[in-house]
Every structure is written in structure tokens, then in C-alpha cells.
Image 1 (cartoon, rainbow, N blue to C red):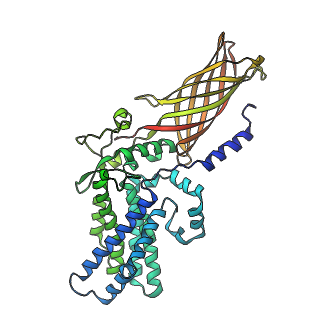
Image 2: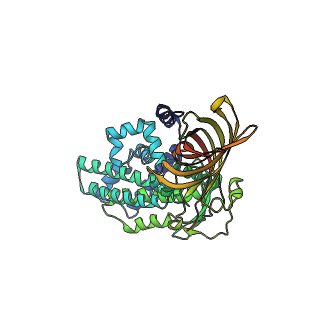
Image 3: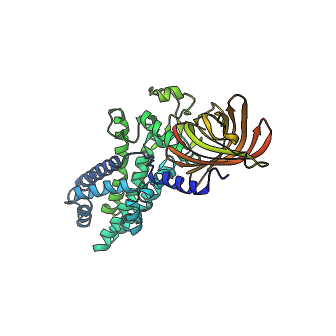
Length: 450
């Protein structure tokens, strides 16, 4: 396998990983900031109105309302908006807001891309569970703050708002069209990003437990006129969520009814066609039909899979009996999903770079890829590559191989290595096969209801 030395892999793979920017977000950073800031301002306005509706509030309540929503309201809202943008996309946990680890993560492009790629918790229905976990933690801290005094009071409130920022980041993600309708934990990173991008732009029809039904979009479409209904539902839920935390601090009591009120506004059922069953309609941008039945989010268990991948590879093969009879070739091509079956076809064309005797030939690759699963938080996918490489000159020869293929998935970009057995024809000599390549994923198939 000397044609693809280990030192080449050690240089190429990290280099591509370090420079290629690939993310899959529900909303752009500025959109998270806008939602967080506006929801904080609205929550404070509603709390102030409720506190004064029956006359002057008790002194302790008035003091806590001043701390959370008083003269520094604009700054507090700005800070909260920034915090919701940082949570999850840049920071792993609320404790990292003021830690050295958090400062490193915020400045580190590698950390940002890692969080963006292994982001299963940002996808519905897991996102709503993440919201509930952090929201309850935020309320608990807010109640501690209400029972405290002096610096203990404001310190606990700060912790509550950090927890709430994480909760509301996941709540916001749960409304994005590209963050629902498929099993993120079973989908590779490239398939998930392609699926995410297509649906964020196309939009989905969703409904809540309240029975409301609306169209929602995703990353980059928060302010789009097409997303007017989606924005309204998202802003209502976000304001109710932070109001529950601020209310627990100001009033000093937990409100389970308000917690359930937020829960009832979250996307619960969606229009979930399998991406691929009507792939032409989807990628031509046709409006989805409004008469399709909605399915509960928890039943959208099908994974997404890479549908169209542009590939390039350098491969080599040689018989075990004659190591000097090594063939080296470069091939570019496409991997295309096969409808209704869990396989991908592989078509490619190129030429030999080196053959015994100095000859050269055109090369045509035909084969199939069999998925074997994902690992390393979906950043690595595994396949069985069954391909015949036809070498065409005056006569026709072939290298038929069965190889294990490992793909490192960096958003849209894939870097892969292969190794396996080959049969070199027409002499029928068994040997080895190895390859290194890269790919660019253009679309994804799959998803849909169970």
C-alpha cells in the first residue's frame, strides 16, 4: 500500500479539518441574539404590568423587579440575547460563561465547528427535552435568588439566567424547520447538514399541543415575510419561557401552569414526508401541500442519508503474488442514493497514473456503497464499497474490489480512506486495494414518519 503512504494521510486529513468551515445551525447568531433580547424585553414588560395591576407591589417584589427589569433593562436584555446565541453553539454548559474553558471555546474555531457538527441535542424532539432540563434548573436558581439577599441574590440570578439562556437556545432551535423530521443521532454529519439546509429553506408545516398550525422556516429566515407565522409562534414561546424564570425570581414562586403553557406552544407534530419520495418537488422549491397529515415529532425516527455526493479519489491495487504489478489511478465521480433501498450507486471516471510497463488507460468505476453505521457522535460514517474499476485501452482489464470505507464528515465535506481485497482481471489474481479521497455532499434523502 505504498502508493498512499501514512504520512500523506497525516497531512491531508487534519489540514482539511482545520480549514473547512461547516456548520448546521437552527438560526444564525444574530437571529438568536434578536430572539433572546426581544423575549427578555417582552417578559419584563409583562411582569411589570402584572406586578402593578393590583396596585403597588410589595417592597421585596418591587426590589427584585428593579434588579431584573429596572433601569438597566436594555443592557440586561442585550446580555441575555448574547447569552442565548453563545449557549450550545459556542459553549457546552452554563458554567462556561465565565470560565477559562468557556473563553477558549468562544475563541476557538475548532470548538465551534465541533459543537456545530455534533449537535444532536439541538434537534427536535431532543431540543425540547434539553429546554425542559435547563429551564427547570433556571427556575430552581431563580427561587434561590429570590430567597437570598445582597450579593447572594444577584449571583444566583446570574446563574439562573445562564441556565435559562441554554434552555431558550434549545427552545429556539426546536422551531427551526431543518431541525425536525428525521433521526439526527442516527444520521451522519454530512447527511444531517444537507437535510437541515434543504428544510430550513423550504419550510415545514407544524402544529403545537394547543392545536395551532403554522409554517416555520429556519436559519436565515427569521425575518422573512414567509416566516411571519413561524416568527410569531417562536417569539411567543421564547418570551413565555424567560418570563417563567424572571417571574420565579420576582414573585418568589414557581408557576407550573406557565411551564406547561410554554410546553404546549412547542412544535409537537409536523408534516414529515420522506425526503426522496418527492425529491423533485422539494428541491424545485414547490410549496408543500397543506392537506397532508401531521405526525408526532417523536415518531420521526428515520435517519437522513447522503443522497448526492461529488467524489474524487486516488486508488491503488496490486496482486499479493507480484507487488511490482501495482496500478495507481485517479477517479472523480458521483455517489447517488438508490430509491427505496439503503444503498448508494457509485459512478466515476478517470485514468491510470501508473501501470506496469508504463502503459495508461481510461478508468470507469461502477459499484455500490452499503452503509454500516456512524460513530464518534456521527462525525464518522462507515461503508462497504463494492466497485469494479474498468480499465479501457485496446483491451479491457478490471480491478474488482470489496473495501471498508471510513468517512470523516466535516459538514458538507467528506474525507475518506479505504482498504480491502481486490481481484485483478483478466488474470484473476487476488491482491489488496487502498484509496484516499474526498467528497462534497449536495443533498440528503430519508427522514419522515415512522
